Length: 553
Image (cartoon, rainbow, N blue to C red; front, side, top):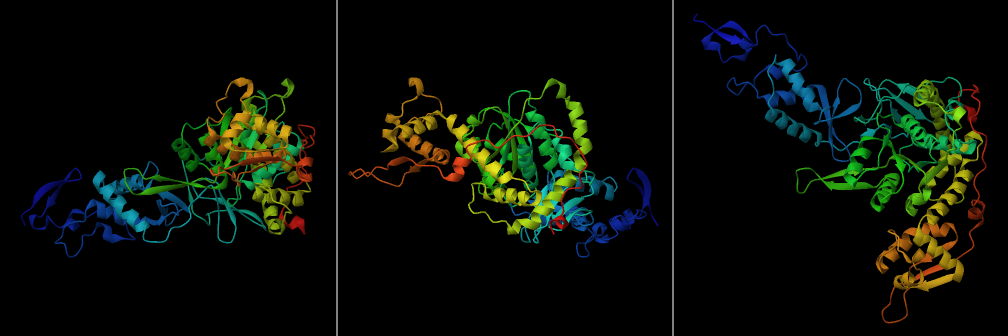
C-alpha cells in the first residue's frame, strides 16, 4: 500500500491516498465527545463524503445541549437541558454564541469556528426559538400559573425561593424561567433565626410607623403582578438616606450597583430598568418631565416600543414594571402625578454618638440579611393567605398596594393603611406647594370659591410670583390647560375640583376650565395630620420567627 505522511493536529501520520477523503480515518483514535449525538462528527450519507460545515456542527452541538424559546417580549433564549432553569441570551458576552465557540474548539480538537459560521448558526437557532409559542421569562421575581411566587437567588446552580399561602421553601431548581443580567448579585438563602424585622429596624433611624410601612413595601416588592409605589427616603444631609435605600434594594434585588444616578435620556433608563427588578435613584433634587412620566410608567408596568437595532421595520418591546426607590431632600421638587405614586418615609438626623461607619453598617447588614429575608418571606406567605379576603370600602390611587397594607395590618395587627393614606395626603400638599403655578391656582380658588374661564384667561388671572415667570410656568394657553390637568389630583387632595368638560356659549365654543372649592371628605380631612411617631432604635430581642400561615388559624 502506498502511503504518505500528512500533519494532523501538529503530528505526522501515515495517510492512505485512496482514503484521504474519508474523515473517519482522520478522526481515528479520537475520543468520542458527543456520545448522545454521534452524528455531529459524521458526514451525511448522500453528500459524497463531504464533512458538515462549521455552522451545521454548531447548530447540532447547540440543539444537543439546549432548548430554545422565545420570550413574550420577542427575545430568543437558550435553556440548558440538563442545567438550571435559566434563560441564556443567544448573543452577548454571557450568551450561547460565546459558549458554542468554546465548545466547538474543545469538541473538534482545536478547530475554531469562524465568525460567519457562528453568525449563521445564531440565525438558525433564532428561527428554532420562534417555532413555538412565546413563554414568560422573568427577572429576579416571577410567578407560575398557580400563583406561586418565585424569587431567583441568582446563584450559579439556579436555586430559588418559592412562596405560597402555606409557607416558603428554597428549591434546587426554579419552577419558572429566569434570565440574568450583569447588574444582578446573588441573594443569600433565607433563614429563620430570631426576629429579622427587629434586627432590620435596629439599622434604620426611623420611627415605628415609618418602619412598618417600609416592611409592607419590602413584602409587596416580591409580588410581581401589582404596581409598587416608589419608596422615597426624605431627610436632610446626615440622615443616612443613601445607605438605607441601598440596603432596601439589596434585600429585594441585590446588585453591585444598587444606587444609580439620574439617567440622561430614556434609552439610558431603558438599559438600567431592563437589567434590574429593583433600583434606586440617589440624591434626586429635580426630575424633568420626561423622567417623571417614565417613572410613573415603571410603576404601572407600561411598555416602551422602539425600533430594533440595524432594522427598518422590526421593533423591540421593553416592559418596565419595576420596584423603585429614591432619595431626596425636598418632596416639593416632584411632579404631581409622580407624587401620588410615592411611599415617603422621613429619616431622622443621626446623633454623633449613634453614627456608624459604612463598613460597620455593611457588616451588620450582611450578618442579619438571611434572618431578615426569612422573616419577610414568612410575612409574605401569611399575606398571600389572607389577601384574597381583603376588601376595601374605597380604593386609593395605589389600590393593589393598599390591599397589601390591609393584609399586613390583619396579620400583624398594625395600622399601616391609615398611616399610608395620611402620609400620601401630606405628600400631595408638599408637591403642590413646590409648584408655583399650582400654588397660585390654590390661592385663586381660595379667594373666589369658584373660577370659570378659558386657559388663556386663567393665565391672565394668575400672574407669576413677583412678576418673574419660573421655568415651570406655562408659556401659553395650551400648556396651561395641560398643566391644570396634571395638577388636578393634587388640587383634589386639598379640596379643589377641576372640570374641563364645559364649553363657552359663544360661537367659538371654547373649552372652559372650572375650578371649584369643595369641602374635603372626612377621610381626607383626617389624613391632614402626620402619623404618630415612635422612639427610634428599638431593642433587638428574639421574639419568634415571624408569621406563617399556620399562625392565622
